[in-house]
Image 1: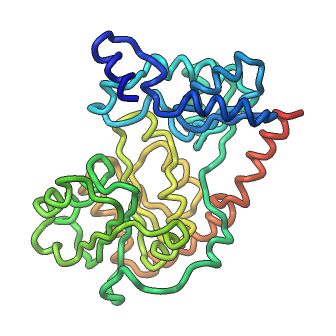
Image 2: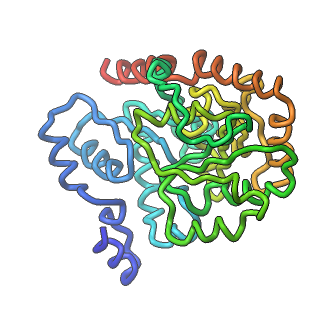
Length: 330
């Protein structure tokens, strides 16, 4: 991958090495498997899928992200954007089937590339995972105070925490704030400098937990925060795991108004309160609307569970994927 970046930096030539490691190894493993259908799910596999198509193999593509339209602007300088767009156009046009994470993304991909609209499979978790919730309280400090939870693999810039901290001076009601993720270098100092003094004892940072424990830790809170930012088309259009796990955990959700999250909100009753991205005053109002009204908060939590069971769980999504696979193999 480093060699690919150097070639691009010095010669201006985009190349498959830029997309990630082990492309040749993935191709070799795919060919050795003699599979009936190969599904490309991340960037390296787009390159592999093109080569499999050239060999007459049956290929599908799952656009969990819009790869050529992803990442913060400063991270796109060394991206092989033209290469990714070419691969996306070819695979979406020729694949046995395609899936993506939202109707908003499906419609945008079809319009952009003139391809059939990918089937929508929400990236949800099994409803039966709720049976593993341990009922413990490991994060919260004061059970008499409502609690807000946010998580990601990485706790750093560009994930909506900026909106949350900027909203705090206008939040009128008490709430604990729990942030979970690997803190990027310097971001803890940034948090300390941007947190109002009166809130510093109510913000808690937690390390990552295992996948098997995550739903339990989510479920011990009251509100899930999904402040996705519209810094790229992919982030605006996709639906992240975060908002769907909050629903599965039975949390009321306060979410930025990305196209993907508006889509989830429209199918979730009162579970999701939206605010305009980059508007901390609107975020404060959305939080206070739940924190200042116990009945409304409990109704939102109840609607979250209903939405998860009815639509946003793997038991409801798996048949859509299997239908696409079976149609591709017919």
